[in-house]
Amino acid sequence: MRQPDRKQTAADGHATGEANSLNSHATIDQAIDAFALLRDYFQGAIIVDAATRITWIDKRYRELLKLAEDFDPIGLPVEEVIPHSLMRRVVESGKPILIDVMKFDDRQFVVCRIPLKDGDGRVDGAIGFVFYDSVDYLQPILDKFENLQRQLSRAQAALTRERQTKYSLSSFIGTSTVVKELKAQVRRFALRDGAALIQGETGTGKELLAHAIHQQSDRADGPFVAVNMAAVPEALLEAEFFGVAPGAYTGADRKARKGKFELAHGGTLFLDEIGDMPLGIQAKLLRALQEGEIEALGSNAVRAVNVRIIAATAQNLEELIAAGRFRADLYYRIAVLTVFIPPLRERPEDLPLICETLLEETPHPGDQGDWVLTPEAIDLLSIYGWPGNVRELRNVLERASAMAPDERLDAALIRRALPPGALDGRPPRPAAPLPLPASSAARPASAAPAGINLASARAEAERQAILDALAASAGQKAAAARRLGVSRSQFYEKLKRHHIDV
Image (cartoon, rainbow, N blue to C red; front, side, top):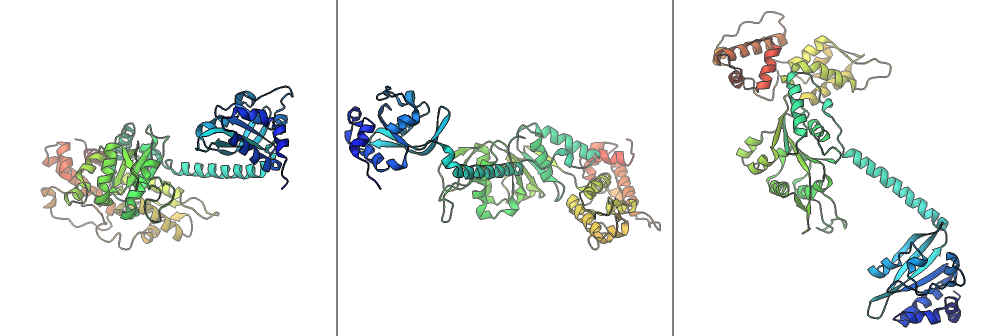
């Protein structure tokens, strides 16, 4: 590489006289030497002192800036000559800005800025280089950067969509009295910010209602982050909740990994199947809820978080507490607002509408019309106890549609789609049957007339049980509901369904 004449370099920038303004002549000389060696690779250079006053400027830089020949910038603050210069930041921080795009008038320069230090390591100035006088030279890099930015934006948008609610309250299908009361309760709870516990059998729609509570709350614009306790190994739960510090353990990432609490900051953290949470993590979760703070695995730094907890379970947490498998203090922390979702068998009047909605979502051949469920098929579906609730109903309808030769789903097809033995004898039910009063239990069973409809017989038995409970309770509805083991809202709904006036 050609070595520029040192004297010529100094003459170009009037360095001989101006370098005296620096506290360290050696530093400015070394900077000029560096520029001289690399001069063919730059378009110009400038040096400032510890106060960011210009002490030297290359002739080519003067030409780039279009400075008048009689204008002497030496001794002026660099911003007076180059308004958008960041040389002051370099001097004050002592850190270089290795590549940057600097605007000057209607042009853009690709520049580099490096701090200058004396023998004791103190910053006593900075030198700046102009790589190019146009960003066109960097167009391939800029294009690649822009493409990466677009990919990042798409990934962030997809992640944001993933962390938003997928369901609304209208997604919970039903027009029965018990469902109307449930939705009204959810709307009330959504307006409050306390922790909520959703209880219900498997397949009843607990996660759907958690989404609905979040969507109708003041946190709707925040993230909705879900954790299924049964799906995460116990050894990974702490890291899953609270995150991992860089190098926290052998094989850990060099970058920090956020936990679900931090990801849900400002929004809702949904803990599904919380009854399966190991005791070891329950104490740490309780502390995070009480203090509103988390500590990443392998870190001593405490971070404040603001999340609303919605938990869900198909288990009886009070029984788990009695068995020593769930902490009572954690239960009282998460069960501030409690929601119970009735099983499908307790709202049979919703069955036709639910079936219609599910069949609308079930694919069918292009040359075939919409699915048609016959009244006899609906009667057959109402007999079954649905231990898997709506989730099982969806599977049965999809199985029936896969076997159907056309769009018509009749009783015979439904019978084949139901689990083997589902309609043999008493319909399978995961919960105990309603307790009948002694007078009813002692009544001898009468022979069923030939051809009687099982659904009608079941409805008549339920009606008689309600009448017996009312008689034993002297007409007190609340006492009758307790005798039957149902809630008051369910009892009133049954009175209306069976046209019983009290």
